Image (cartoon, rainbow, N blue to C red; front, side, top):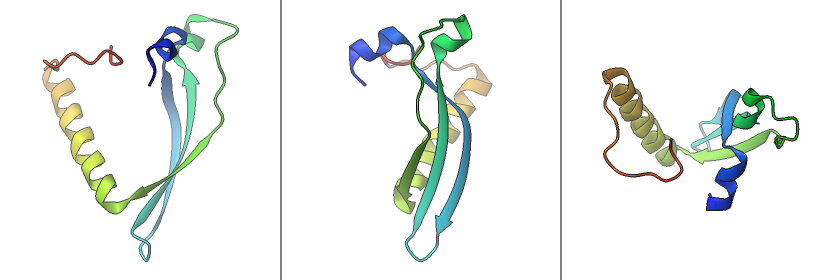
Length: 88
């Protein structure tokens, strides 16, 4: 993400659906997003089209591991010590 993209808000995942191909070892993710500025009532907040993303099984496993780690941190009240400029 480019720094100038942060000014307008950040995309928030609102809904998703999944499918998979055992033969191709792939997961297909269909996702919908809103700009976080929509919650502030900003009328000209960007609108985003739904996205279809294909994820290799190996990448999906790494993603699951990282998501679970972050969920555990949040539920334990642990803040990340590394400075991430795009994560608030």
